[in-house]
Length: 260
Image (cartoon, rainbow, N blue to C red; front, side, top):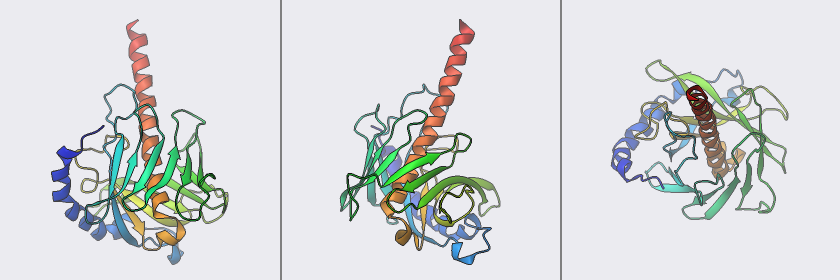
């Protein structure tokens, strides 16, 4: 299990500044080209995903990070994502007060898309809350609600920060129309910021699957349950680690074949 104690003091000293800077630069990071003003993103709740991710130079093994904390605006744990063992991608998302809220069935490899189950509220715990649809030519992932038919897509976009530098951020949108293929359409529900002042302390932009500040729109909760927003974001981070592992496998194979 990853030891977060080394980063605890660093995070405590920077979280207030980071949250403040994210909010103050929101107008720069959350610009929307959609002329429909109802789709304008208005930053509300700020959660912090405290994930270390994986580096570039390593063997292509699964992440050893069995627990990931998701902190609230005051720096206290709101959610914790837990895996039972390193060789399994399955995870349970626990709320500090409600207990288990979302389970994720996750397997490494192509054509093995995750399935998320909502364990709280009126949802049937035996029925998938969300299934995942992805395209081989895109890093974007679409999460489909089986009961309602609604779809939400996490995708990578470039935005300018307060200093005018372009950075990559993750954006979650509710698709405007069922079956649409344009990732840039629809209401923005949440954004994951991983800039210099917002990514998990001790990580760099070169790490895959590292955490940052998860900004929810002021009207996000009526659109999609907060726990599902967090769980789908964590799936995106796992997919980043998968892509890194595949690259490492290719590199390792090239080294082995070149030396034989």
